[in-house]
Image (cartoon, rainbow, N blue to C red; front, side, top):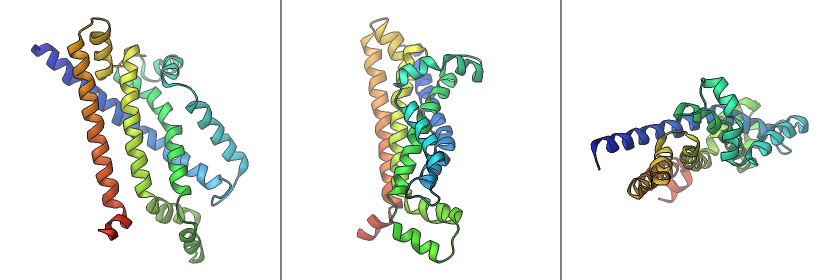
Length: 222
């Protein structure tokens, strides 16, 4: 393997991490508030509102029902409008965020729904407002589940970022397609796959350790 290929693979790792982490961060900026809104306006939420919930629910279901590769192609005009181009690592973040935000919202909604209602009632009896309950009770009690969801989402977007290589998305996926598929260079294909597996395992390991560390129940058991 020559120096040029090594440099290309290192750049591929950088671009893959940039796309994955960038889309996760922006996705949570959108998806976390949306997930909280879905919980709050849900049937058993703090302030049920069927109309608002159905709108959010409909949007999440529609976007999540579209396969990522098709969504990637459908959003090419929008991506070009937002970042000025439809290919490359920065351009790929746009469809990744749009794909991730509804998924994150569902993860957040599910995590908040799992919080013991007794804890919420106790906070209400002490005069806590809905905002206080969300920030000081729900998000705190659901932190382990939220971190687990964050880990799963990051791994999912890592795979999607590699998938974007089929349309020039950049990163390790793009290298695998250009060299492993079009040029039949199996060695490069294997290297990119191994690197993606290693990155995924690192993400999973960090997420698992952090979730265990913040889980007060497991700390008590230890």
